[in-house]
Amino acid sequence: MNITGRLTRDAEVKTLDDNRQVVNFSVAVNDSYQTKQGERVEQTAFFDCSYWITPNVAKILTKGSLVELTGRVSVRAWTDMDGKAHAGLNFHTSQIKLHGGSRKAATVQATAQSESNNTKQETEDDLPF
Image (tube, rainbow, N blue to C red; front, side, top):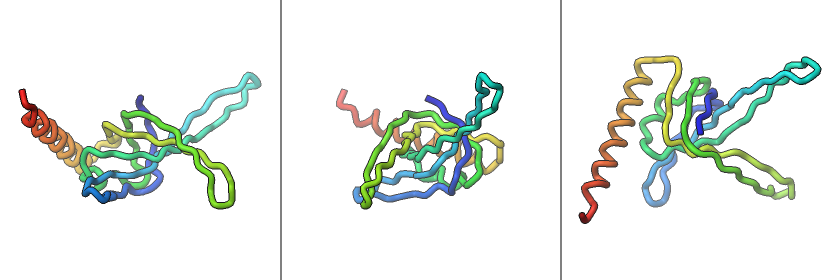
């Protein structure tokens, strides 16, 4: 699935207990349609996104950046301490394409692809056959 939207905050890199790193960020996706009565309706969906391939991409994922993401969606639901129900959308990102074409963005994207290819190479070399 692909979504295109703007980052609502700067990306953050989180290091887990097992030393793996994940990049977390949030994206707002706008949509609009026209009702039968001719009224234009605007809707915004917010996605909490995670990206596991390389933490370097966090350098260019800044608030307001326009991004196109490829990945999969999951839904989460929880109840807060007051008993109020909440729900949210998670987007597990496998590919990030920056729109706006800054040179810095192209450099970091190329670095991310290179690191991803190196990881794949190491994995393939570990195969016993």
